[in-house]
Image 1 (cartoon, rainbow, N blue to C red):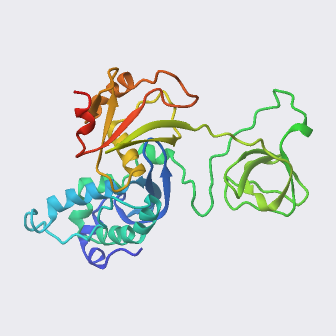
Image 2: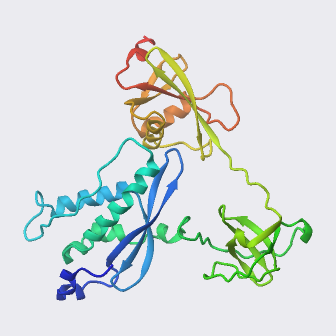
Image 3: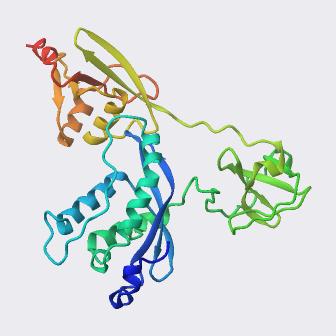
Length: 336
């Protein structure tokens, strides 16, 4: 994206630090799984000095930034001469497929960032805006998982300490020449033997030859001995939905250790996604069978202690959750 004309014509722009962001676009969205599932936007940022890097931001972070900028510079709250009309931000959406919502926001957020970075110089120097586009240490350690080509960090291969014979190792034969176009990619010739190390995704593998280690497209090789099937552990959270005159059980699969204690907001968001369109509250049942409503993070320890299961099921969280509608008080009166 070219620099905004209003900035190119201003001498003030030349005085800006080299690390000020001048363009940004969303390269991808990534799903983050836990007690709640959300999507983060993978954003490639370019600075005035020409450097490029990736940052990872949720929609809620866009919303927080926009709110702060409106409070500081918006027509209603800003102080002259530092007042401007900020670009519109896509509105919050509470119901719907999260992936579709995230992907639908990409062009809107790209337009938002483009307009925002075309703002006057004093907007670009705003501390909150600069922190939003700054690459944090956590950002720098992450690698985009699903860009045009997934390029994970490669690793050094240890010597065959377990003395596994070559015939027992997962391996493939190259069907075509492949010349990697990045340092992480493995180059080989037709007929080369490649020892397989891991499966990156459905299209790419990681392997090694006598010349090095790297990733390569699976379509370029014939697999002689495949990698073992990976088993991804799934934990289960059992919850009871008390819906007026009936109660139903729902077991929710999670990619979390059963020993982990969720935060209140994570748990509430997870359950809201399971029961869309219902205004609900979280509860735990005590030893006497009475429901106790959970309201914030301080109640999470209560959930873990009071909601303990009497019998353990494999890979189930050791506590149970009870869900009621926010306006249904009958379940609480039943315990009186």
